[in-house]
Image (cartoon, rainbow, N blue to C red; front, side, top):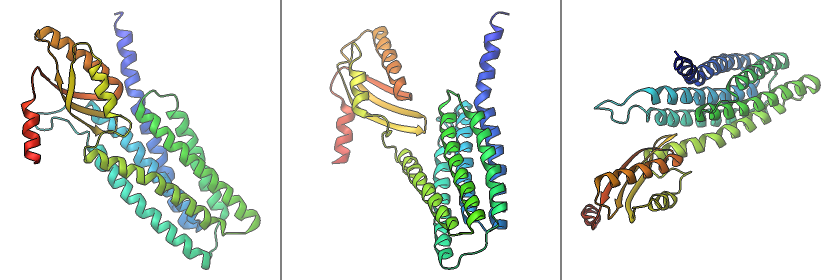
Length: 303
């Protein structure tokens, strides 16, 4: 009976990130659709640009939710790493689409400098204000979480909140001055903001697919960390890469003169514990007590 309360509390805490993200996705999707409709009705390119920025947030929130759900799915004999890489494929697709949308927005904005159109500032203001309200609700729902995926989603929504404020300011400017040139200027700024955030997304996703070492992990630091474990005499043939955005993988050959099986298990356990701070969730450690024949074979194949 006494163990039931902590278990229930743990289950509730596990559901919180998914529930928060689901609420944020629903709100953001509704506002995205409203901004698309409002941008077309009002003639505001800045509102359409903010809708594209909102689409980026929807994709980011979906990726965060998928990462949590996928992490709960157990591997199978055929899919030994599960479905973690689905996140990376979605990120690449998202990045390419957003770059294309940004280019279209910039092209249309440049054309409007020579032929400015009429803009309904009332519709523009109303939709942007609704978007701001939804973003503030999303920020409230997502704030305070210790989950890394939710924290990342919070930052995305924060950026879109600032974008909505800018659109509201532009709508007020147009309403009071009639100067519609602020609309294409703001749309270009939003498009550039989308581009600036899309290229790093593509770069990081491609780095994962090419199995580069994680950008935030120094391979030499990992090697020194392993070599600092008592009983380890050296480390070589180290391969470090990312399975997805929050899980790193390592395989390495560990040289140790220890011959006792229990002692080797203790060393392996100590190494795995030290690798946790580098977000290395999977590690394959091969212990050796003499020159590595496998490494020599690899270099011979390269030559």
